Image: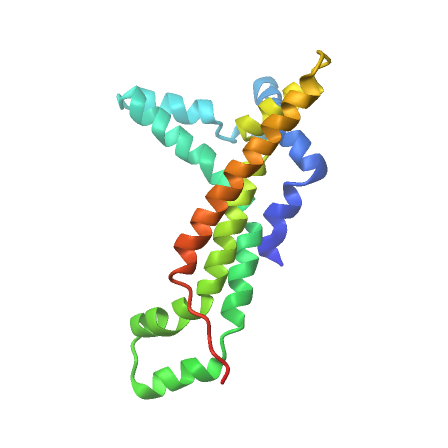
Length: 194
């Protein structure tokens, strides 16, 4: 259940707060006023940038490190459903299979590659498709934002143009999903029940 927290936090009010960046502004104002000692101990991205700059590290490296740190939040925020799917897949593997591997003398490496990985390969396919769909339909996607902007424009024929762009975007996404599905499903192991 704890793996689903990023998905819960990404909905509703928290998403709006994240988009408007209100939390960051309130933390910065608290730090600027010095209202509390604990709030002043919070390290912001600006502090990290100035730390690396004072260490005489190149600006390219500083920007790269700051971008990675910023992306960690997005990765954790978008991976709640995938973690639950993998967890369900791992729990669906019978402990008797692992026990028989231990009795036969298989190492942990062999057990992972011969048992665990093939058994969760259908979940890898589902997660791949889910991730592609999620990335193409997220609110941070520039194409989706552009289509929404054109759709909400009050000019004549803007809704027709936005609808046509949406259908073209949908077809491109379907083609990419088909390619990912074909690529990943070639390596999926399906257990036969004879």
